[in-house]
Amino acid sequence: MAFTIKVNGATQSVDVDGDTPLLWVLRDVLGMTGTKFGCGMALCGACTVHLDGAAVRSCVTPVESVGDSAITTIEAIGATPAGAKIQKAWLEREVVQCGYCQSGQIMSASALLASNPRPSDADIDDAMSGNICRCGTYARIRDAIKLAAQG
Ligand code: FES
Ligand code: FES
Image 1: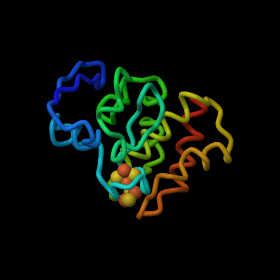
Image 2: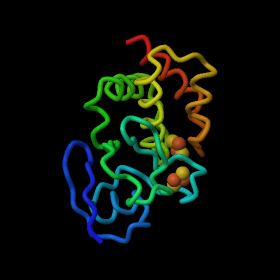
Image 3: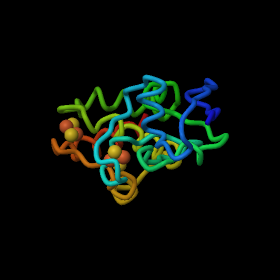
Image 4: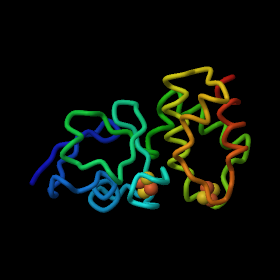
């Protein structure tokens, strides 16, 4: 079945089953591999994208549920004010280790900063708690979000 979705400002037509996870549509149909597969069960956050600015787990988001919502992925988050600040702070604080979780981390952090420009430690913990990092970059992530909030 054909679905029309809006990804990073572009309208895309994809021919997939309605229950296909958005993650597979992005990666396998559209070839946008910046969004990562980790667990497939909404447990790790690696697949995080934005729907109308809200962070969602694309591995458990059926494409038929997306409708007219604007999808933003890691490929375009740097074009948003909050995403640009987060990516700059990530570089300044050298957050990344292996990198696998990081697109999801940046998407969650960007959604947080866009909705809450001065997040408290508790706000950061709350927004980021679903994003797992096997490399343990959590302290640098929190530091980078605070730096981005000052920008
Ligand atoms: S791959 Fe979606 S939350 Fe882990
Ligand atoms: S940087 Fe390696 S899993 Fe997070």
